[in-house]
Structure formats: structure tokens, C-alpha cells
Image: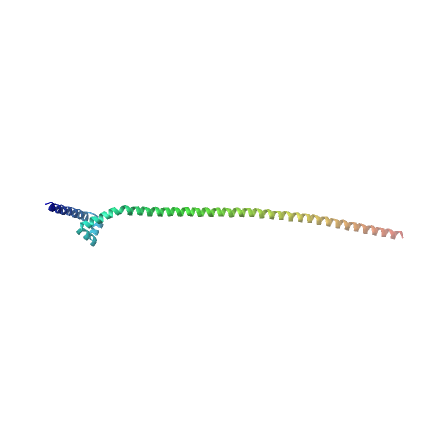
Length: 166
């Protein structure tokens, strides 16, 4: 008797399961009805134990799959943030390099400016001294010419005086 009641309980359970699946099949969205009309859905309808195993597997696999997807998402976000940090590091290194190059150019330009200013000052002083020296030489030459002219004039006067005296 126990055997008959165990079989009848199992048949009742199978009937309830089938009615639940039928209710899902009829009342639910078209996707479920499409899935149940497929070959796989029809096979699972005729084999409720296998359908239960697939459903349990799907429910139990949801957590590991979800954890894996979270891990993948965290990995992608971390790599993106790492890439951003790497880009920031590269930009910072480039900025420091540019700062050093520009500082070096500023120092070189100041030094070259001082050198050119020294040359300019030296050359302008030399030219000024040369022009003053040239003026002094020209004045001396004029003075010498005046003296020569005066001497000539004096010589001519002396000659005239001598001619008059003769």
C-alpha cells in the first residue's frame, strides 16, 4: 500500500508540476510560449525531472555567473581607471619635460641676451671711442694744416718782407 501511495503521490506531484508549467505556458509572455513550443521546451515538458534539474541549475548558476560578470565589470572599470591614471602620469611626465625644456630655453635665451648685450655695448663703445679718436685726429690734422698754413703765410710774409727789404 505504501508503494501505491508513493506512486500516487508522485503522479499527483507530476500533475501539479504539469499544470504549473501549462499555466506558465499559457498565461505568460510570448517568449515563454515560444520557448515551450520549441523542441527543447516540448522535451522538457515531457520530462519534468529534467526540467526541474535545468531550472535548479539555472537558478544555482545565476550567482556564480553574476559574480563573474561583476568581476568582469570591476576589471574593465579598474583597467579604465588604470588607463586614465596612466594617461595622467604620461601627461604629468610630458608636462614636467616641457617645463624643463622651457626653463632651459629661458636660461639659454637670458645668457645669449647677456652675451649679445655685452657685444653690443663693447662694439658701440669701441665705435664711439673710434669716432672720438677720428675727430681728434681730424682736429689735429686741421690744426697742423692751420699751423702749416700759418707757417706758409709767415714764410710768405717774410719773403714779401725780404723782397721789400731788398
